[in-house]
Image (tube, rainbow, N blue to C red; front, side, top):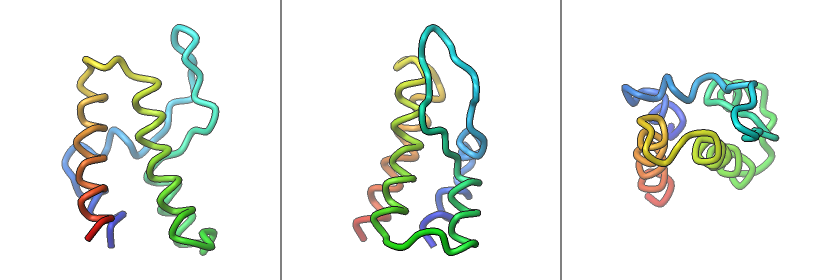
Amino acid sequence: DILHELENEFYAHKFCKYIEKDIENKVIKHPISLITINLKLKNNQYTSLEEFEKDIRLIFHNCYIYNNVESNVYCLGETLESIFNKKWNE
């Protein structure tokens, strides 16, 4: 499935845990990770595809807020989001 494809990307480990610290007034109000999403899937916590998509997109949103646009992690987030968008629209 799409989550496993994202998790199998070689740089996905950057998104498997969420950061719980504040840096320079950057606060992640709704932290989430691929591991959290996987657990929610296993526990049947999603009632719609839209909820799943919202959580996946929240990972990217948090990535862009937390990381500098020139950082490696920001770029990895863009790449992973591009892969997600392609798979999601198939």
